[in-house]
Image (cartoon, rainbow, N blue to C red):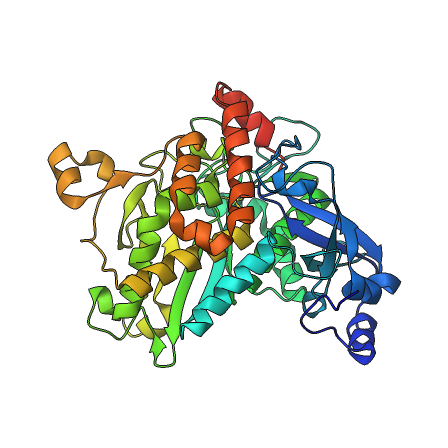
Length: 456
């Protein structure tokens, strides 16, 4: 069998990696196209062998929907065949949130040892490499919003109370938050901020940026850690986009910055708010592709219960400095910190999106903008829901897709994402999003929220 990873660790490397961990069993994860983190596990004594030849997993997961129902696309799906999950031992992490366990993200290979064409993690790595080939380096991180609910019920009953962003609520989660931050630190993820959020029982944390694949890996591990620590406190963590219909939901905003050999591209230039030309072009490419990106990062039917105006969910295809109703928010940082702080935030994403597909797709969109030398339109201020027809026409501001089928259509139309993902991965994602849209076309908001409440 041909060697699978581009570099197999030596026996000495493996011994050093494994010997430093106090764990008996390793969870190997991948995220499917519906945004569900799937897992297979091996005893620690077998992890080196797993890194050489992988462990088997059915390719049927490529077209699983969030409800675990299978469908079939043009290229993938069905009961036939097998893939190999190969753990990335450079990311092997002892789970302080789950004693006796370790974790590693996995890449997918075929049985003959070649990279699987529709591996989502490798797609993210390919796009990061494409950026490097273009002379660009990206730093990325996901914000995580979630709500803590009482265990023992399928409904959402907030486990804590108090005003949004309030010290009252923080006091109720003080020990929980302290332990969560400490556990993430022991697992190699450094938290930048933690605070109570807007909705009942809702919390948020942000972590330090990483390379694109590392940022997606971090998102997987952060979410698992939140779920585990919540259980230890007798709570359940709700990461789905809709807590309750009619209320503000939970997002998973992506922050990113772009650099070249000359330094940051979003500061130090003569463009809008100091952007350099390539930085502006990158953002313009992301802005142009936002309707298709919704299907990647927020295409679940329940996502559209969150994607409504005037809730800071980013439902408008526009940009602005610190404009929280715009899907693309530009952050300069305070005066004097622009070179280290300037970044962009995509606000329309949530935890139903596969983080590897999100980072890879955003990079692909941005690189297309750079290749074409795109420029940003005029920024907006305020809430576009208050704009009259003339203001909307002049500004060019449009609503992003309002239904899952519409978002799937925009994904189908995206030549940029077809080329970046490849036919097989693009079709598998599209197959999943179309199947979910059709299956739940007439489902009530209350039922949609219940169906997705504890799935992510």
